[in-house]
Image 1 (cartoon, rainbow, N blue to C red):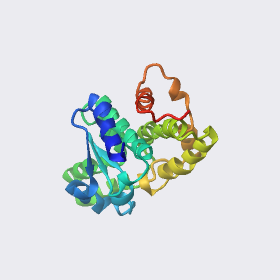
Image 2: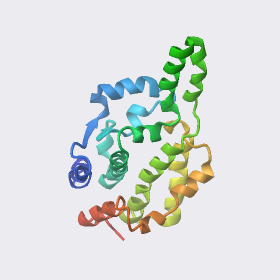
Image 3: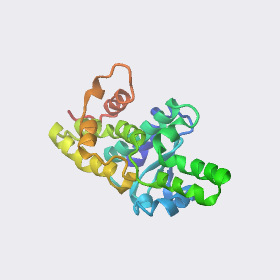
Image 4: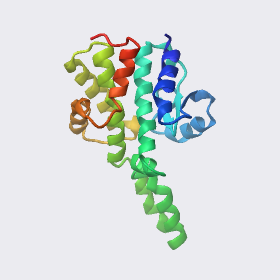
Length: 223
């Protein structure tokens, strides 16, 4: 099964159970992604070419995304489907608020201060656009990046210490760097969270067990 076929299989088998309209769309064909890139490229120059982005139940992938190993591409799709499920768990716009806080408050604060006191008094709200720590974004991304452990352990046969090193290098840099707008500057804390494997023993949350079941059903488990 090709990378694209496997990803579409996962969307049909898993994602659409929670969000029937889930789909994968090329970033280059999206006017929304091009619009967002106008702003995001200021701090993330690889937004269009190196990042997969999920808004609502639409997963936007860059050119060449499906040219790699099928299980490796599926790892990213599973990560994004976690975000789709997270969105369904938070009513109304609470997901966006939790993910975007505090930066998401800027337009509201700016407009309210401008209308109440005038333009110059609204300028202090610009502080909300600074790369302030965003714990909500950290928590939601850590939940999604836990898919790394499942795929690297069961589909690629990596040892735990290899996975922990990869997560510390990759996820740590993502969370503390410009890719996620300097979400959390505390590298040690990020490493502690991403390398905590207790989520595998959670009897209530099936977000991860269904990934593993999918891998078993498609003969993608090698250990």
